[in-house]
Length: 348
Image 1: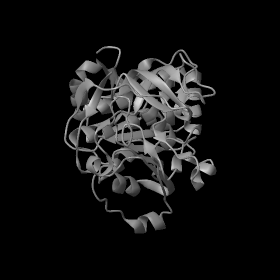
Image 2: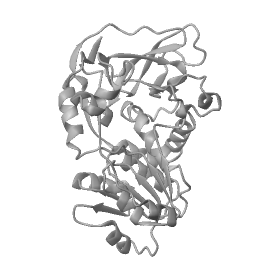
Image 3: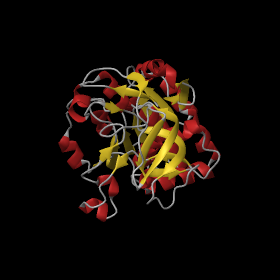
């Protein structure tokens, strides 16, 4: 099979022939149709310090995907050949305290598809049956199915706190931040503001329903509050960027008792006014991945019940390229000016 392969501890990928993966007794083998390019994949491609500390090359990367099941192991009970699926990328142990308590997203032995085991930048990928999410809704296109993983990040983050009637601040208008706008609107938020420095992404944010898209290279969040007619500060914050200035400015603009969900991974140390966190009685919650599998149920239910949300999340995919043009796709994703980039593995 063709695969994007990192042959050793160095920068770059190679599109080469690799052996097809074999399905174990509890696994499903999937013919990959479409894959999303994630920030994690950019780290792996460039072989930066983060990638060096977590990746064991050689490796096939890629963890956001949609495909068709072509083979099932002898112990597989529910998933069938022919099913169209996305994949939960966190493979958990099932026996640690959190797994046994039903908190699988907090498994201390998690192994990530495309990070610690071969992933989906290939014509075939193998995952446990328990990690395959079967799509029963025919309106889920390959492109939409390929971004269920990051859509799940947006849903997990946005639904961490009640949103009905609340004023929401999102920092970072990357693909996940953009999807969070649509989720927050679906969940009943009153005012939604989002920050970034990319004009194309801020334009996308307005199309997805943001009341205010703030270019923080020229405007401060406090000024934006006045423009929205707010008197006291934001009720819910979603930090999606990882930028060192984003969280401190968010904290400065939260109402007393405000709640912040943090998904963005910091690229460097962040200085926080912990006195303000205490005296303003703020709640900070770290978010990683998706709740397994409550987030997945919520994603499918929301998309099937809300055509506006369905159209909005689909619109976050701004570029779909043949997998053979993967280098161009990675360049577009790295430029940080558009939405989600998807590779089509039926075009090699």
